[in-house]
Length: 262
Image (cartoon, rainbow, N blue to C red):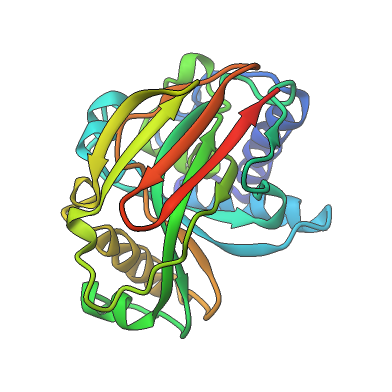
């Protein structure tokens, strides 16, 4: 690690305050170009602890920048990982308040729910599928705290990979006998299709993102507990939304889920 503990605490507080006050900031590597990957995840850990201190509860994890479309859109080439809290969850078909968001975007995902613990190292797609209770359609609402949604990998890791809200819904689907690579999705905004894709857009197989997450956590002495919700990463590029928009995700064989932005 390159940064002091005091500086890590300070940067986490800066990002937390940006979210609470709905204000953006320059990516933190502008002022701290020497920060390393351990620093970035240490800042994320402090950010999570600040949420815990306010009463939030950990319910799962998320993978980010896992599709080639998303990597190209954001100018990066490696997936990143973050945490999911109960306060991020929105009801299926419910409302998302835009007044507390800086520049919201949505992306379509396949969400996994685990039935047993997943632990790395050595986790692979087969391990993930064996540990999966079911998959279900999910929409993640992203809101980077960085100005103009511009960041590098270390900055976005520190910012909990732009997490804001998410919704899951539709029909849970067991993974036995299902090829998640070929599951087709359509994301609609205000009744019009805006993006299309299939599960293979996420690292060739969405379970590969979950395996990478388990191995990442394993390297840090952690695991994915049974009963965790995991967003496996955006299948397409993120789509900007604003108050008045309605967004629906339709996934082959799993129905749909959606949100209204107000």
